[in-house]
Every structure is written in C-alpha cells, then in structure tokens.
Amino acid sequence: MRRTPSRRLFAAVLLVASALTPMTAASAAATPTTTVPPVGADRHGHDDCPAHGLGHDLTARLDKAVADVRREAGIPGVAVGLWMPGKGCYVRATGVADKATGEPMSTGFFSRIGSETKTFTVTALLQLVDEGRIRLDDPIGRYVHGVPNGRRITLRHLAEMRSGLFPYSSDPDFVHDLLSDPTRTFTPNELLAYGFKHRNTSAPGKVFVYNNSNLVLLGLVIEKVTGHHIADVIDRRVLRPAHLDHTLFPDGPDVREFPEPHARGYTNQTLSGEVTDSTDWNPSWGWSAGAMISAMDDLHRWARIVATGTLLSPETQKQRLRTLPTGFPGLTYGLGIFDSDGWIGHNGSIPGYESVTVYLPSQQATLVVLLNTDITSGGQEPSSLVARAITGIVTPDHVYDRPAPTS
Image (cartoon, rainbow, N blue to C red; front, top):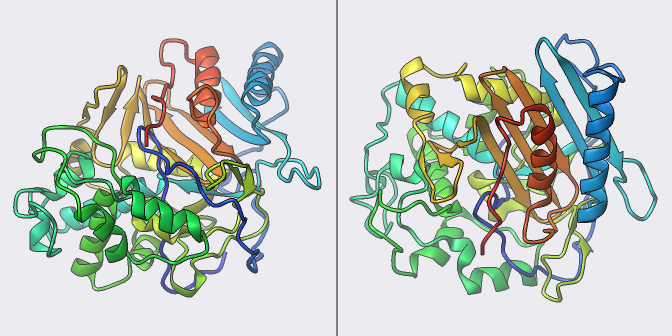
C-alpha cells in the first residue's frame, strides 16, 4: 500500500488499562477513506487455510466456541486466525462488519489495533538501544523536560509500565475533553499535561500500572534521538523491514485515515452510555501508545517477529522478554510486551475495536483476533473472551487470559 509522510496515532487501553469510561454520544462525521489493494488471506507466500485446516472435529468445536462467545457477549463481528505448525490452521470470520447494512465480517479487513501499537513503538526504541544511541537505564529527564521525577524514571521503567506516573487517560478533564469531541486532535504534550498535573502514584520501578503516558514519552524520545516523526521512524525501521505493507500509523493531516476495506466499529464509551458508531473518531489521543491500523495477515507475520526478536539483537530481545509480575495471576509484563500463560504479545482496545496478537513459542503457534466492538461483557473485554475460548480448546495447558479492564 502507499506510504504517506508523517503518521502518528490514537490510543488504546488494553490489558489492565482501560478505557476511558463514557465517550460522546454523537458519532463523528465520516471522513474520506483511502482505498488500497485488497488485503488477501495470505500475501507472504503461504497457502490459504483450508476449510477444515485443523480437522473437521476440532474446527467444528472452534466454530461453536467462537459463535457462543459472539452471541453471549453481543459482538457484532469477529475475525480469528490461528496457525499451529504441524497441526494446521483456523482462519474464520463470523458476524457482521456493518450493523446497518448487514455486510459480513471478513478476515481481509483493516482494523484499528489499539495498544498493540506499543510493540511497534518499543521495537523502534530497542533498535536505538542496539545502535548505542540510547540506553534503557537513561533517565527520561535527559530527553524530555518537565516529567515529574524525570531524573529517576528510566526508559526501562516506562517500557515496563513501572514509572509511577499518573496515567493521563485517568484524568477527568482529559476524559471530558475527549468525549466531548471525538474528532479533536491532541498533541503528545497536551496528553502528557493531563497526567503531569497529578502526583506520581509510586516510586519508579516499584508497581506495575498500565499507563499510556509511558509510551507517549517513549515516542517523544524516539523523535528526539532520530530527528524524525515517530510514525516515519516506525514505517522505515519496523514496518518495511518486516514487510508489513498493510500496517500504518496515521499521523499529521492523515491522522483520521482508515484504509478500505474495514468494519464499522461500535462502542458504548459515550457521554450517555449509548452505543454509537466510532469508526471515524480521531485516534490522535493515543499517539505512540495505541493508534495504529493493521490487518490479519500482517499481524500473523508480526506475532512471530516481535516474540522472537527478528529485528533486534539477541541480548536486547532477551531484555524485552524479561517479564515481571503484574499482580494478576498468569500475567507478566516485559518491555512493551506481555506473557499470558506462555502466549507472548499484546492486545489492544480502542473505542469500537479490539485485537489480540500473540505467539506461543513452545508450539510456534500464532493467534490473531480482531473485533469491531470494545463493549465489555460481564466486566471482561470481548477479545479476551474469544481468545480464552480458543486457547482453552487448542492449548489447554496454555490458556490466554486477560484481567478485566479498570479505569
């Protein structure tokens, strides 16, 4: 697909992080979309997944499990990709992409991937570590002025979600300003200011708190060191070498770009709590923390790259995967990446969309889940419910599980 100069992003709150709580009731006016070459089922030289790629019985069990979760959680549409070398694959889409027209969901759509953006941002940061241009134990104050306790908070603390900074997305003024106008564009410094007016929540390195402020700061570090926009750095240093030509970081005048084809997204993060179409909301509020867009085939490829460290030195990848307890059973977090009972990767949640992209090294298996809603069910993110149902069947000794989001 075409590359446009200077792109950035919209956030996502995944994991323990979340969501803003109510978003505006009115949906943003639609913006022009960019048409790109169709996203194929597989553009990297692999055979398409056959109808019963994991065998008739197992495929039927997965079909039922996904259908059950979709019905019980009220998910409009879901696309799932599961690849298990030596056993087969399962690539399916079910439900609708557009509730108004009934257009079916597809595995070939672009989708907002929310906090999965963090894996791309941290990869770019760690490349600079490999080049000796920065060190993980450098204080953030060396690169960005005005950070509370910035002389003691390191780049490592930020990537590990252990900075002790107050998350800007938890600030009531930020929530009000965003939800009052979801078409608004925020700058990174505007975002950080919402959090910096609060006292830090803990000393650095002590407590895991999922926090988009950390990744916005790392985005600023990357820009300062390279002299280029973070979107351009990720495009040149990460997306192109990884051959992810259907993944992008919307930025600048193209911040609301959302290439076709894509599903409509539905959220209840509105001021009224009513469900609305959030497809074209401005993603600038997450910037380098979570506004990227991708597609299933690219995420299939990316899952292994980020989990095995293809773009990094072995020593730096080892540091990325040195995960620490989060306080949630079965979940540890490293440098912009988590380990959920053996599944390594990240998930994302943004108004209208959720995603999961994880890799299980012990079986070289990859799972990608894409949804067109972020509306929780029973306090659980719908993407987690789908991923848990699938892994509970195919890898019962390694069941993906995510804690319920908190504000």
